[in-house]
Length: 404
Image: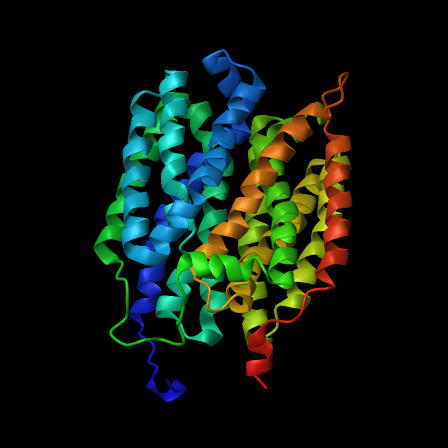
């Protein structure tokens, strides 16, 4: 099929915008307790690690359901898959709020929410492939991935504010109501296909695609990069308050740091993919992201001044999170004709596995005397240096050759 037969529709942006709120809420539920770890521990009479498990449950469940979710996305289409995920998010978001004072029921609600999450966030590149031409797909993936950063941003900034004013129970209920509204928006607006194709979208069946992509050297390298990069993001996000509490910072300041980190990530996820699409290059921008996050991570490790801490968090988020949409699109391009949902989900699951490892590891490496996480943050910086070296061996995406 030639390029002249493809047509783009303005409705593509409405479909993408309808996806953002429900994707955002899945991430709000994941990281809700991170900026209020100490307050939640006191509220539920549990340890910090038990509160951390509320976030970690998402990672464990993701690993267990990622392949069925990827199959659902690639077989049923993103509208059906995301629709099921949206309903699960709304239902269990409400139960978490209604039974907010019962830790066991909150934990069970987290499990239900976690089952719905991969059906939603694994669909980003599928939406891009269905509705957007090739030249816009990294940008579309960037805006889709933006939702994954908006959710933690909302949680980091809004959760401490709500807890201090209305308490934990009301905060959880408000989030549940918001998730129900987001689910309704998606179900009313989203459509699976445009009237005519927007671009090349030939894909093989999931398991054939899975076998082919796991034989590709560059995709295996990319899996390692996501293992480290998403693991760092998940670990730092989960322990954001514990990281800075030993230096005398408050839960509100922890929320602000997490918020600035994610604001930087949102800007990076918008700006960097635009340049990547314009130049039809992926590798240089992956390298830029990995190199750029290191100064921010070091600053977050040692800063004792509040403003320097915030600037460090912004730099860290800008570079680390800008790599997400470019990495997702690069993975989809180098594994074609494997299904986008499969490549997308495999990359994310690497971050869930490493997130579990990093969360336990960061807790284990705490200083016994001061509870500082300096050693674990330096270990994360060293891992990032290793990924920079590995990324230099990546080959450029086929879109670069196609642009010639």
